[in-house]
Length: 489
Length: 94
Image (cartoon, rainbow over all chains, first blue to last red; front, side):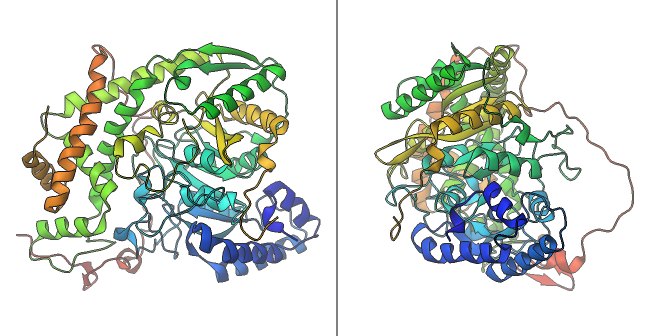
């Protein structure tokens, strides 16, 4: 039986009814990885023996009749920027190629406490900087729907693994769209929670005021189940929000009657692929048919989000990545006659071009004489962008847009034009600047490539997002479609 | 505001990055293009707008000052590329 095709909630039912064992399930998914991953290349590391041992533990719990949660015995994988004690965590970078964390990230610990079973670590753009996963220092991950196309990024391995059924669910991180844009490109469900909702302890930092961890799943129900497990206050993260976490499955009612939905017109401006616009507008009509009240709204500062982001994120990255100096961990150059030369050579050898580009950009924006003109200006524009959303959410429960202006592009298409690459995140970046949550759910196809619908909510409004996403998913049904990988019918 | 190769060299030193000549030329060109695009922000009047460095209203998160064990020295050193006598080894600094 092809267990690897099923969702968390389907597998949980089968596990607790003892129709299957976790060991059987893990073996089935590992077989799938061994068969499919040479083509997709989602995984940087697979921990086969460890996952089989953990499956045995999960089966023991279930057979003793213990009251187990929905993630017990379920195989999952993590983006390779989340620390896993004793298992390499590389950020897909040469500089961390041999780094083995001495501790677990809080999300790693929480999933492990819930009984979820780690299969391995997933490829990404180096240090999560990129929109296509072509910036991985190791290899390219391929889009399961069309292997000539990128999976999106930076969480490319994270979404490709779920789309290709090489993991039941995964966790990604999202700084400017790195969960939602690739989820859209690969036709899976990807949520960026409210900033501070999920602990960043043990997430290797890119831009600390923007980074957030979130689930990538096969459907919205699974998304709610994983969010239940990972959201909540963590004393180890001083930016963690101290708020109550509801049971998100309670929002999966299918009822959006009377829900107020805003359609931000700036997200449908020129530059958007016509099929993407059509698919999203069809979805909007379906919401109206379900009884939601749909209206156009304006977020006037949208066009300033991208330039503001590409000052703020590189500025924070240049500061965060100063720690890679070849002293405490990571790569260190062989030749080191003095300390400054050692730092410079270590970083020259260890970082790839996009990472160096952003360190340069950020260092420049923060340097003496340019701080006010660039960094401070960008922070002020960030306030204006956040206020646009605050005003909109006084009136609307959720906002709807595409998750990306286009479907997946081909390898190499944007690699030598950084600005064109940055543009593929125009729909997702404003959400990170405002700190609010957003989800991408599949809403159609163009030339066989998936299109993603983005639903945004106010801070800590994940409940409304999941409510809308679930109602839509049940009516639209695109989540049931799978890519046709060779050897399958 | 055009960025010269000299500016790129200065920023690279601040960032402790060695760059090849080819990279210096490439980054000079690309930083000019990217920063040219950033000029768009100047269209907005932001006089009187407070900056947002952080979206959550959290300030000075404190905990009780209680003694507790730190990470084992061996674990702290396990990833060090060079070590000696239980310490990180670096080139001569002064």
